Length: 268
Image (cartoon, rainbow, N blue to C red):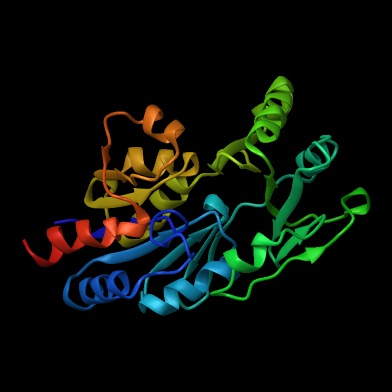
């Protein structure tokens, strides 16, 4: 039996309305109550945003956020923080993205954007998390957890290709994607998988004793290092191709994660 369950949020634990269904809540709450297992959220979202879902589940465990740049206890204690180097922040800020691509940063305090996107409110309606509009030409933040660029798939691919052409920069950062329309940059060697290992080491749990669920390329390392990695049916095709040996289950709107967990933890 697994000793830890790790779940991504969007496209995985959350349905297309960016909510945890009542069925999924009930299954996970029952597992937490009846089984000696840690339920850990690992998300690209900011800690302030994602913590509301820990509270909904009553999970007294750990929350990995900003793609592994942060990790907190369920009580809000900061355990891990990987801030980007100032020189790398300056280099990333000098990247010229297409005018239609929205620039975001996550800092220790919150979320900054160059302009609002109507989808932001729907995406964060459960937490009420909202961004600050800033001028990145006069941006002087030193406590950056990650950059996030949002735009049309083709424009995000163009931006990624431009960044990858800068070999020296790519050597000093982590480049990943939670969605095809979203490109993310963190400090070098930051990932959900690496931070998860740090957390499990604290608990004396081996990676082989963990089961994880995800749907994006930012979940790839996490899914590949645990004992059992499950890919959602609605996942990025890039993730499915990158990890062809991992099992693909149903979709987030089918409560596929909860159904899988119910079968192995509550029906076994």
